[in-house]
Length: 278
Image 1 (tube, one colour):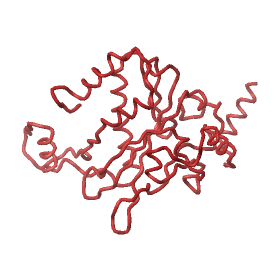
Image 2 (tube, helix red, strand yellow; image 1 turned 120 degrees about the vertical axis):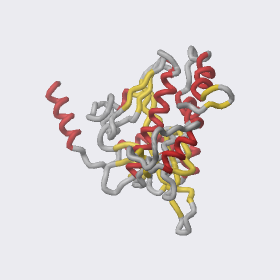
Image 3 (cartoon, one colour; image 1 turned 60 degrees about the horizontal axis):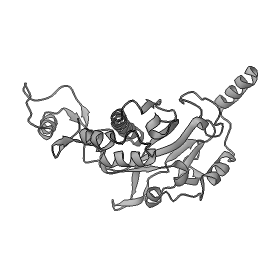
Image 4 (cartoon, rainbow, N blue to C red; image 1 turned 90 degrees about the horizontal axis):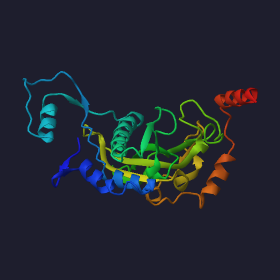
């Protein structure tokens, strides 16, 4: 539930702020930054059904409830493994954005993508100028020094796109995608940069959300030596400012569309299917 502040909930303030302006076209990138500035990660742990307290359990606030659940053995730590924790973060921010989009009324909508597909969320509607917009969620852990201090770098490079499928062959509809890549009016990434805290059940500390166009934070290297992934720069200041390896969007697409990726078997099948249809 939204937290009540100053006599009204965050949701109420959001509805009031945008309700009068919903007839105007909103810039999606700016709108996402505004929403992300109000997001709070409040997943307190994994709920364990069996507890060590008496019933009924009565709490007079969210903080009191959490303290009692914790003391009663109901809260287990979130996973510390990067991919598993990233899934928790992604589910949380997607649900948050879905509620915010719903508050904009019938002139905006969204479709949630598949777990391993692209994008994580597509947003559409007249309020955002029409067409479909791809929004992908990327979680990344801060790198740490040998003395345990957070560095100005992600631990590993964020993956922006799978280079040898929907990105390279942007006119094809791949399994796990909602539509061909080229049909999106814009592409945006929400980066969730965090410090891993092994001493807390939430595991996430100093969470920072960054909204950028993928080409602005792209590097000239793959994010994996074994997979066909397009990588982002690792410097966190560069991620914030959109200061990647390319001066223009055209330069980015020219470089990565010409990159010598391995051909994916699914691409061969889709091209053969298209040839037969012709």
